[in-house]
Length: 336
Image (tube, rainbow, N blue to C red; front, side):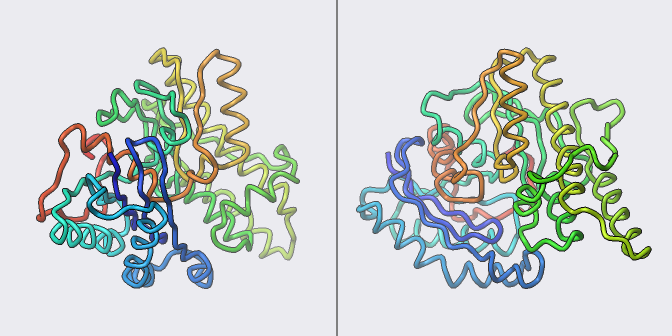
């Protein structure tokens, strides 16, 4: 079964054709990074306008590259939650318009479920159940994936997400948007023991995260040094900050894996491309005899192929929307 997938939750307009949830036939992404770089982050109004301008061409290109017509498409999968509401509405309404014109059913897909599904495209042998660490710019979760469409939150951030903390710390250090990528590269040259930064722990919730205090600590450290006319070694500070974030992520996920006796761990989301996180997950899983799956680097960021993968399993479970489908800025992965 071929699914046309559409993604527009943030600043990438993407479309893909995916077969049986595992095979990418085509994938097209129109990025807005260069424009948002001017403002140091995503401007929601600009993102929505660019989606409106790009979506027709992106979908047409994905269909052309797949070499198929709408008669070959069994369903249209679209990201409908969570994300920037204006951006989501562009994709949702375009999908509904296509459905009305072609008679092809629409499958609503949760954005975080899609990130998890990127691993189905990278690893044909991967099947639930497994424990997943989902880490992105807006979300940090530990999720028990009991089945393709049945998920249970084990832990989540109480405030900032890990990706958000990376981006804001990087921006304060003077790095361009998207900051987390640049911080990761610079940190490779630094001494991660140079600065002692807090490693937050949430009382009575051993699997939850909190990155707000850590982010504030590094920002205050930078501002205080600037006021004194001092220059901090950016490589060392980046490395120390990255170590603190990654330790928090890995400590919690391995603690959860031990408690739940999980034999398989999966990572997902944009921050799963972080080089230190990937190394520490590989090392920690090897030490504990746990199978580890991580998405291909090309599938860590937002794309429509992952939407098509999850959309296939949502379709099989009977999750089909009518034309009253609306976008939602926030929604739990458990309800997706």
